[in-house]
Image 1 (cartoon, rainbow, N blue to C red):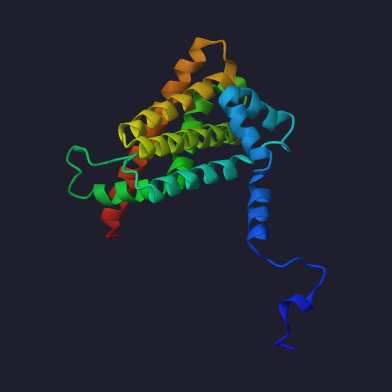
Image 2 (spheres, rainbow, N blue to C red):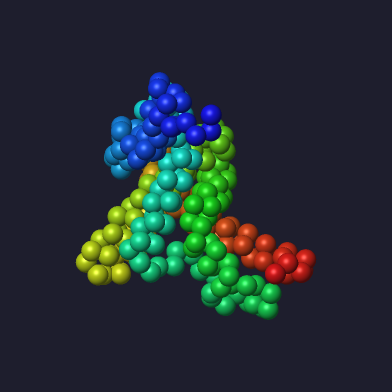
Length: 233
């Protein structure tokens, strides 16, 4: 009968309420232990944590893509609800003679509004360069992408923290400081992953991060060029 009270349909299942939703989110992210454990270990020993995930135990650690997506979502929500103004990626500079077809403002707005997709794209490009510069270590592109998911995800959490501090103390410059610390964390974590006691690893990881960011910029310019000649507005 369609008019039955929902509590009478199945006495073995609990009603779906706020507690149920919170529990499901916690279960998805393992917030009760895994997420906080992952954040803590990434701050202290990111290389050891990622190597453990790849070769030893994956049960205690939040999955890499979920970690990155959640971190990006948290950053986006933090900037939205606390009205923090900052542009992470911009194409508004003069770019030779291609300004006639490059919708720089539209691209910059889309990239900054979709930090999760942007982070995944930049992370994958950095992973490609990392695979080249650290090829003697025999990690495949997917394993290196796992490393970048964790590194960039943690960097986004660092930026979120500084965004909250910027809101609390009314100092917008703290967002810029948090961004630089986030960038520093990414290349530091890559260097530690491949051998924390070798300076050359940190130098190469910095180069990979720079090349990955430049590559992302070039991909955007290429897409704009293709869209222009295809007549896509």
